[in-house]
Amino acid sequence: MSNNMKILTGFAVGALAGAVAGLLLAPESGPQTRRKLGQESEKLKNSLAHSLAETLDAAKIKYNTLLDEYARKSEKAAVKARQSAKVG
Image 1 (cartoon, rainbow, N blue to C red):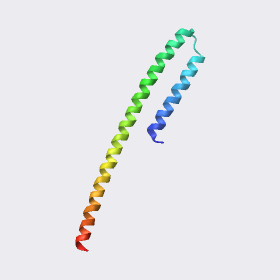
Image 2 (spheres, rainbow, N blue to C red; image 1 turned 120 degrees about the vertical axis):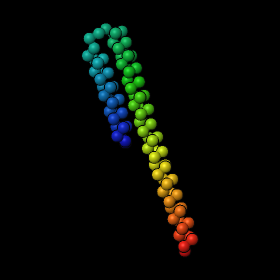
Image 3 (spheres, rainbow, N blue to C red; image 1 turned 90 degrees about the vertical axis):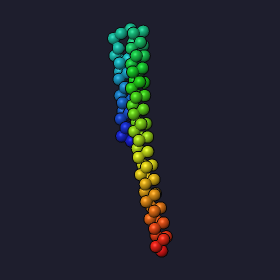
């Protein structure tokens, strides 16, 4: 599991634990608690979506970097193979 996914998972678990604790310890009435829960869950959803988008962007950049590196190394190997074929 990548470091970003560990962070994202930890964040989600912590937020869920906080929401449960908040419900259990809430001094407000049911409707007020549900409204607050709805607001907090919306914030959590937005935060998770943002974190996921950042993680995906980082993965795309890494993928493209590795793909470019592979293409360069493949081209170098092809050039060496052609040179060896000419010499041999």
